[in-house]
Length: 134
Image (cartoon, rainbow, N blue to C red; front, side, top):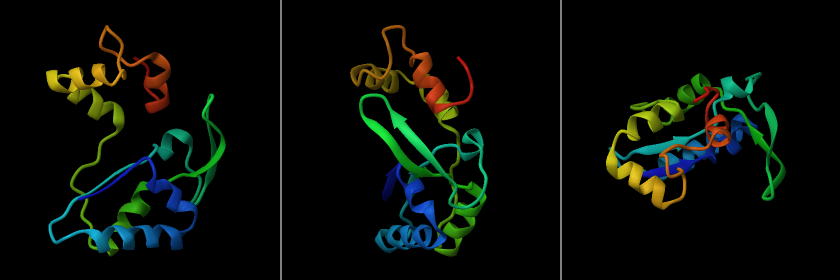
């Protein structure tokens, strides 16, 4: 398994870098292996073209870090060229809502201080992860 959580979009500065990332991923997978990736939702941020740059800031941690939008159909097409097959694609809030029905998942989020005592993400965290409101 190869896992890239909120980092593969950095390779989308150029097509050449995206292809190198996919080469690196597929060169490490065994036959039948699984690649898991998480990216920001380009359509929510406002997608323009391949390699569109935006600036990310995280109060008291990150100041003006360049990040790149991923046009998902383009990513999927490139990934297929490297022998990858899409088997699962959902937005964060959908995964969260489904998994939050599971007791073990909720207990893990609470132990990690991700959710409050009432069992929810803060409004700011939810808004950062999804364009939808609580």
